[in-house]
Image (cartoon, rainbow, N blue to C red; front, side):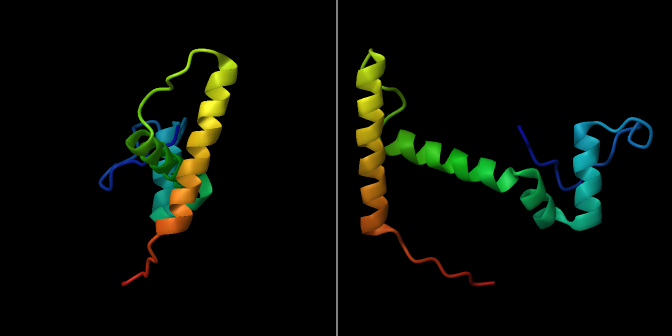
Length: 98
């Protein structure tokens, strides 16, 4: 899991000799910038997946209703089709302002 460090984060005491994962992320952000870190670390993909799961839970619900694996597979297929069709019908056009 990749969680972004806070904007005012500083490396730990052992960052020079034995850097932790957090220390390496902080160093990368300092060297290349936050946007480059997001692309390189896979943070954008994680955020996109979290958004998709949130949309799923909001529209479909937090749990599957059927108990058998076959029925759950069908339920997921139908729910995915519904969400994809909703995207095709009502996806807003976004324009970057700044």
